[in-house]
Image (tube, rainbow, N blue to C red; front, side):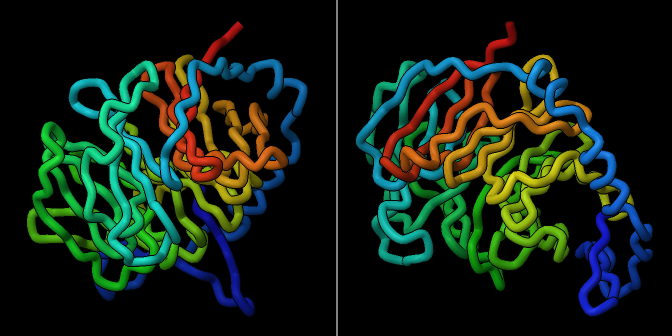
Length: 305
């Protein structure tokens, strides 16, 4: 199923950098409408019955606008701290290192960043999205290695590894970039990716979340893109759930479970309490969620009764 959108009656097509200036095939008319109709027919009671629950393991305080999480090579967690405005180049951002029990092993494990958000580890390198560039560090020592500008980027957000390449989403341009041996290249863009945020490589597919429409998308290429679920406004991080399904955070305060057939159940809603749920990540059966406000990181365990 291909995503379909129109503006003033003009069909918008998906673009991949590999296609150069050649024309892309038209989207299948009515695909989005069919997806919506399928989701409207979903039974909320069945969704709730199949959903797991989240058991809180720990909450650690003392962070400064924490946003992203990544798994370190020694099993600890890296937490990015924006430390100010998310678009300001003030040089106050840093990365913390946290143990599996929530102990802060080193608050400023790596610093000299602006507003770091998503992160990923490939080999011995930690990659950090920092507004319009990617900054790399030795994943063992925290020593800064390189700075990689992304031309035209406005708000680099989440990161992942897919097909042995590092990817980064740009929420400001509805695009995803990949790092290659020849430098950064555009993987793709689409107006249907407005507010693209979370990305997660999973075998031959890339999972994508969007803030504008709250989509969870299964992307496998220009001609293979499905909407798995919709309506999760301000969708942020995404993770795979042991036993099937997905977790998706919405940064204003929600954590959703999406079943394999696309039914959405909200497991947590802390918006009224002022607790944000940012770049959710799942490592095994443990869910790590930075809470930009009030400056905490929360660990959950996925439990199926």
